[in-house]
Length: 225
Image (cartoon, rainbow, N blue to C red; front, top):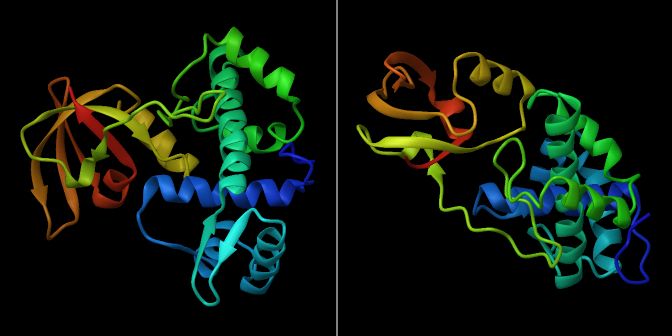
């Protein structure tokens, strides 16, 4: 059950709050019931009922036919779950040998089971990391986030030397593909050319060139090398 104040949060409720919070990390677009339905794979009516319940508990605000937003209490609960999730992912990679494409679903299950004490023990053992295996910032115990001034690879300038700082973990297949062509976290590269008509970028990495589709480039965030 949830761990925010005296209000009980179900596992599903925790997941909803976390998904809303993480969605706002990646886009400025408002989060809607239809967007949540598409992301979670649930019917719009089921999502709408869950949102209404969370709003009644004080974790969300929801304008009718409009966007869904976290209240201060909802934000606190969401950040708590994000911290758990990303610390568990880091532990699975650093100590148990998981690949970065294997940890998301495992962490989804474990994050609801571990205690606050265990979460903080994990953080201590891991050296209080500031990012997870995908480069996602890990909230501190007080809820603050380390700064990450990154931009989408798809929108970056040609010719500049760049370093991969973050990769979306929405698709394990994409993570496996990127890892296989040497485009993992902290890899350095530059955009050699854009083929807008073909929807691809030509990248240079360690003297080699690779073609990358724009949908994949949208999932990669970079900083100047």
